[in-house]
Length: 216
Ligand SMILES: [Zn+2]
Image 1 (spheres, helix red, strand yellow):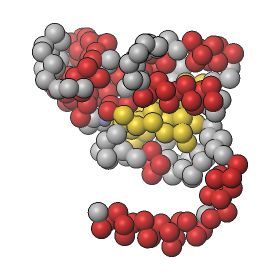
Image 2: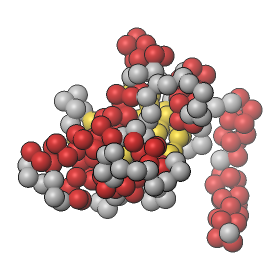
Image 3: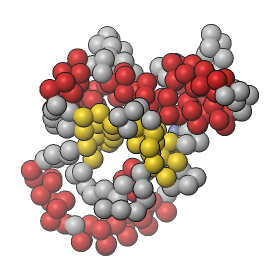
């Protein structure tokens, strides 16, 4: 805990002092972020650091494996869906980014879980089952190139497929689909390779394209 307290004190003396006016303005006028990021809880992927953002820039949701469940207005507790509702209807956010990443533990567990096997956890297995279509797609792609035996290969594919499944699930929310159609909201699929520090973006051909690390 001392490490966090020491970090807070550095923030207070440095960043806070330098950005006092911005932070005060945000506190008074409220937030007006233009991006929502749905990222993973993984301690090695921190969007605020990776994208060098400022306070007020990004409405952030982090959950296990950056999963987006489909629209299901039932009596269960839907944390990610509640955040989506607030961001889209309340803040009228114009961009949602699903940010997948390499070496994702949640995706690793999904790849290892045999479909139909008994649940071993109170919440995790059920949560990750949302991404099962990504597992199927990843194995199909791996089998097509005789790589289904290579767990790392399947995991990297599954991490990317999970972003595609998340985007498809976003479009099951009627108020997201409507806004995307009218042009008020854009959906983006991104992938961060933590070993190389590389960022990829889904392009119009539904392929992950490397973002040049240097440029405009
Ligand atoms: Zn992860």
